[in-house]
Amino acid sequence: MPHRTPLFDWHKALGGRMVDFAGWEMPIQYTSIVDEHEAVRREAGIFDISHMGRLVFQGPGALNFIQKIYTNNAATMKPGQVRYGLICNEKGGIRDDVLVYRLDPDWLMVVNASNREKILAWIEENRGSHDFKLTDKTFDWGMVAIQGPMAVKLVEQHSEAAVALKYYFARHDGAGDDYCIWSRTGYTGEDGWEAIVPKNRLLDLVESLIGPASQKAGVALKPCGLGARDTLRLEAAMPLYGHELSEEIDPFQAGLGWAVKMDKGDFIGRDSLARRKADPTLPRRIGMELEGKRIAREGCEIRHDDKTIGHVTSGTFAPTLGKSIAMGYVAPECTEIGTKLEVDIRGKTAGAQVVPLPFYQRRKL
Amino acid sequence: MDPKNLRYASSHEWACLDGDICTIGITQFAVEQLTDLVHIELPEPGSRVSKGESFGEIESVKAVSDLYSPVTGEIVSVNSKLADDPAKISDDPYGEGWLIKVKVEPGTNLDHLMTLEEYQKQIESEEH
Image 1 (cartoon, rainbow over the protein chains, first blue to last red):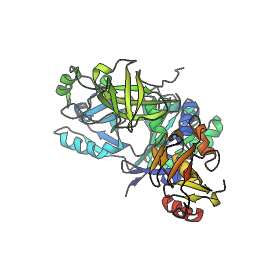
Image 2 (image 1 turned 90 degrees about the vertical axis):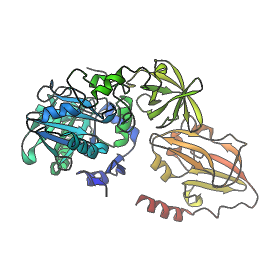
Image 3 (image 1 turned 180 degrees about the vertical axis):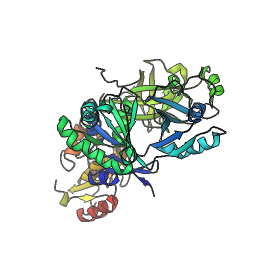
Image 4 (image 1 turned 135 degrees about the vertical axis):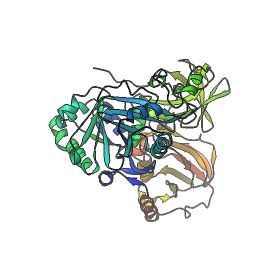
């Protein structure tokens, strides 16, 4: 039986089309992927992301242990700060991409749903003598993302403290049923927040945001499914584990070298990463715009001068850009912006061109 | 066209036979399942299609699906307006959104396809 989030009945009542995603029954869309996508770019959307893994580290050894398995530097984080990073295997391949929250005195790690069990096992395997307690709060807490240029007006109605958060900062408040974590984070390329509350409080939070907060703010908050989450993150060129990221790909290949701090001290994968960073032969992640409207989907071959030079990892028809776009990995000599490539889409070739990432960037105020 | 007078394939195409010309499209249900159409690939007039075989593909943001011909024959007409505006299919799947017209052999009938009532039973079971 797949897991259900605390909002399962709400999704069904809204006509959400439910699919299995990483062992969870999740809505792929309620109305249309494009409508939901455009709502987030133009105004505001809300996503159930309760399927994400939420792991709490407590105790004197928590920081040192996180440092051991995480490529970014948690030691330089300020209280309340949130930082993106990778968990790598010994060979430097990516086991997961995660957000680490410094919620003094504890640490929270948000991991991908598809990797939660793998990472739990990895933590136990590498725990050694580090003195910390790990609690998997995934099933005790629910989580939603409120994203879009007008999200600020809604969050303002709900919590003045949350609205005052800076980008990639979080705060936690309350105890017991009133406990909540708000962070100014997201996966859409827009301004936005993510909120974690006890599972029995999630529906109340969602209803108060969609109901009273929306009305007071004069902002429509549209329920959005995983379909729009995927097209939004793709336009923003954010990698998705299982597509752009895998055990065989290292962070430098993925363009995530900024999230690897080689000088922070030892961590799992560091020696391999030092070698891989200096290796000019490894394939690199690129973005492409395709000619025509057909979509280059995962696995499509990418060619240059009649030679196969790589494969597509994700592709879509970008609603904001009105273009067919894709990401993939190609031989390093073909990564220059403007390079003309060809993509084999189900036996027919489409012309493509390497373009800068991200495909879409919001106008910063 | 009135959905009551059409016949349906389990792969969600509809067919309407008028003399020896069979018009083919996809159903409202198929359109609702696909949503967000971005592209349709149809064959050239003059090419042949065979019953049960793919004659093109329809692509939405979510997925790409093959289109299957419910009859055998020669394509005499293709709805050329769809290339620039695939949304026509979702707006009016039984009218403006038709896909191809096929000239069938004399004696061809659509008895192998479902009636509207039978098709509705199929989609009810798919929805559960």
